[in-house]
Image (cartoon, rainbow, N blue to C red):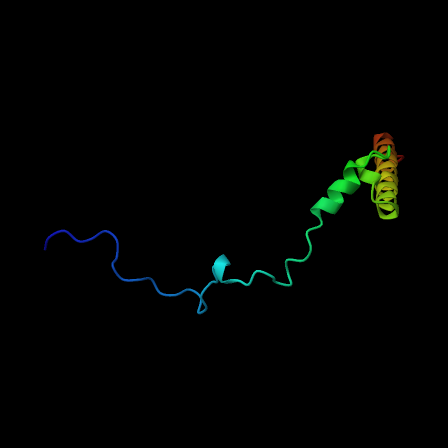
Length: 92
């Protein structure tokens, strides 16, 4: 009988039929990589123009900020009205 090996010496069956690519096998210039925008954004956000960071990118940021504020204020008012209505006794 003897001792049997704990780890199987057979290789496991393939789960997927294709092999994976190692990073070194990929070409250096792939279309999905694109241009590095980080330095441009760093220049934009670090510019001393007196604007808060959440409004530095212009009209889209202002639109998102105002929409968020309107939804927040509207939601607060809605919750307060619902709380007031829930606190009133029902007429039988």
